[in-house]
Image 1 (cartoon, rainbow, N blue to C red):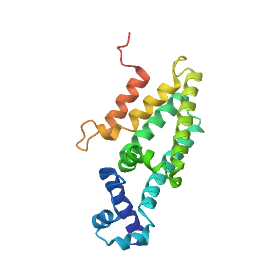
Image 2: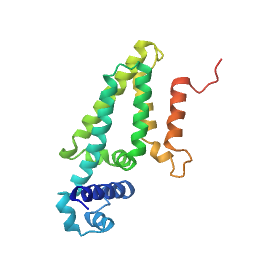
Image 3: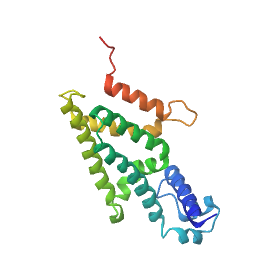
Image 4: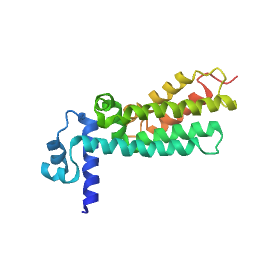
Length: 194
């Protein structure tokens, strides 16, 4: 196995452990044992436990924010931008379930360390992205003119990022089902059509 492949395998194992046990409760020895290597071997790939979680979170967020930026500058109509942004976010919760869980559970703790100052910046970037898309939707008439942008932002964020806790691996209440239900409620409401 190449050094790059081994590094990625260790990163994935660490992500699973951080998501399941918590960052503070996971030691380098836990990661090494799960990877079937000695602790010293991990230091060949990563300088610390913090370096591993940093790489996990940066990679996840860089990918997601790259998608967000593409949508923001696209020529899609405002409603379609919102749909695609919500879909991209739900897809991230499915594809990067461990990273999302780590972010949701550990961002406040990690954000206290200078190395993770970017987490607060990403939160601010996220708010700016979503409120911009929502405002564009209001301005275009795709969304109600009296829409509370801040409330809509929180509704989207708090639905999307906790979806991994609702969905199960057996397919019941899967991420796709939650996403589609959320999109229907967000755009069409919960009351019957007149």
